Image (cartoon, rainbow over all chains, first blue to last red; front, side):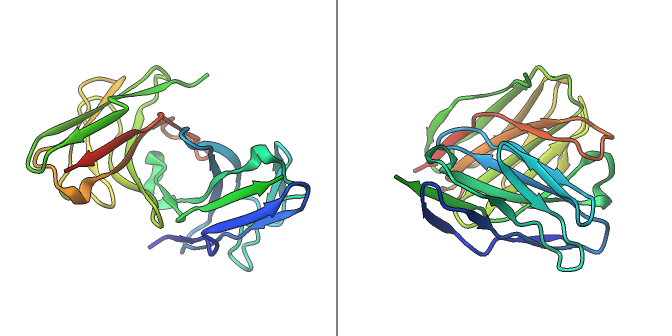
Amino acid sequence: GDSVTQTEGLVTLTKGLPVMLNCTYQTTYSPFLFWYVQHLNEAPKLLLKSSTDNKRTEHQGFYATLHKSSSSFHLQKSSVQLSDSALYFCALRSVLSGSFNKLTFGAGTRLAVCP
Amino acid sequence: EAAVTQSPRNKVAVTGGKVTLSCNQTNNHNNMYWYRQDTGHGLRLIHYSYGAGSTEKGDIPDGYKASRPSQENFSLILELATPSQTSVYFCASGERGKRYAEQFFGPGTRLTVL
């Protein structure tokens, strides 16, 4: 079945530094990948999405590129801000779910940005 | 703006008791979902629905039932609550038949089973 792996549970950085949060996936079918962000005591919200190989997608200063050759969809930002402190989930849409659009989520990576 | 609301926001229940978590969406979305969130596990799908009157089992349905009486409302029912069901529960809605369909999440319900 489908699976998503996020290797870092916690990433701690100083404001202004670049960040990369890792996401790799396994699926037999064409992948649709998403990044969701959840700020403290809030609901998860969509940050990025892609199904196009080797094309960079960007939103709110974050960017990611789907690489089918390495089954990866890492999330990056060139300069993190205090407001980026949150829990980030990578998710894979199951093609077999059809119109139901089932998502398989990774365990999540907590990003903590320090002054 | 998409709107998904959940009630209650916090709930303390006793082992063996019945718990009902409610979700309402004003997006007119066909698809609705119930997840639980636990540290180290991310979001795991419990039940989902294609529309009023339908419910389907997700990845971890044991110990849970669901009800979708209308397009707007989707409930999660714990008939006999256990401490292992202590978690944060999220409801979400999404469009049906759209490949990139974003899921819109509610604010969550923190459930503690003593």
